[in-house]
Image 1 (tube, helix red, strand yellow):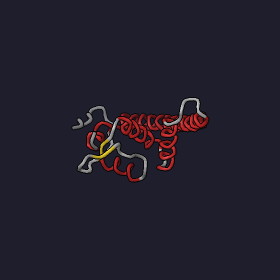
Image 2: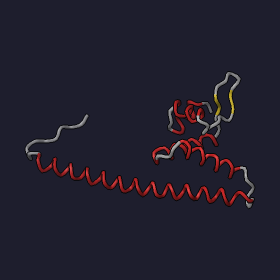
Image 3: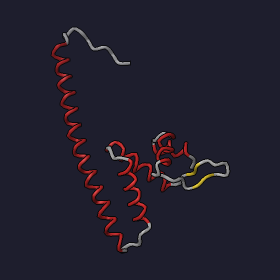
Image 4: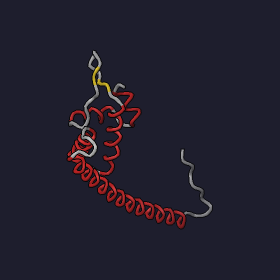
Amino acid sequence: MQIGEVAECVGLSLRTIRHYEDVGLLTPAGRTKGGFRLYDDADCARLRMLKHMKPLEYSLEEMRDLVRVVDALATTAPGGGPEAELIDRLDIYREGIDQRAQRLARQLDQVTDLRGQLASLVEERRPSSITRPQAG
């Protein structure tokens, strides 16, 4: 796939995909004779992983480390010596994601509470004869 197809499929901008390539998080599977980037399904999977890490506020270095771990695990023979260490490192990331998800859930609860408070204030203060304007 070319970059535009990947961007649409994954839901990232061309600029973001190029940035990830520039900082070493992604290497296109190949290039056309004309020099256009070509990506495969593995590249799309990597971009989805990176996309999911971004709202969790992972740094580029943390993203880079996770990519290295995933790549190393993909090339390690099952039951090989380094496999256990790589799995442990992935588990640390999983635990970190769990913690970040819990933090986001708390933030969502706070936002929901605030929204409810504001809605109550609006309804209390709005005279019953005044109708709310329609959005549009």
